[in-house]
Image 1 (cartoon, rainbow, N blue to C red):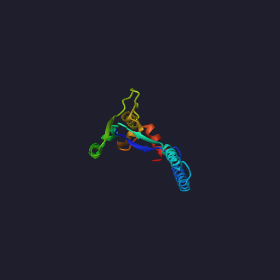
Image 2: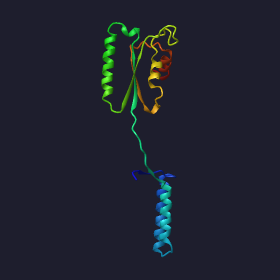
Image 3: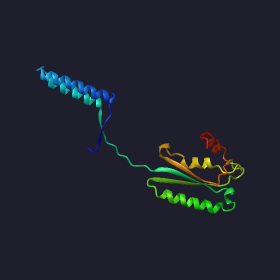
Image 4: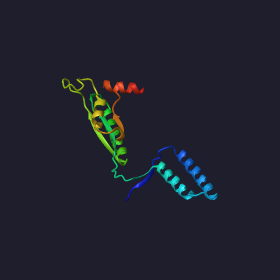
Length: 170
């Protein structure tokens, strides 16, 4: 058997220790005075103490799961102005390199492009970063989400993202 034992007390540990101490003292006094059955009463009290400690053998077969980080890269029209394309590439390369150093990390990279009018996806509203972030992390349990990195020029036109930023007070 390759499990580990853990204690899950049914009552606070202080009460269990107090019970064990009092019953041990009483059984010792009873045995010293020659009272019948002191040994068996001590054995019964220790049995109750063990039951109150509620020991369990835990045998789990777990496979470690990697944490997930979303890397959302803004490639909209506003990112094509001046030095922004080179700055974006430098930033994305730096982030990828840093994230590659972290063990047990799954990077979900997604790119945001300009919304095409008439598609129902933005209709010319600009960068829809939150939607891309939701798509990148869709179906991932919250416990596995390590974070999100948004590489953008800061010109967020996504109403949902603006509402989220206002909620956290950033």
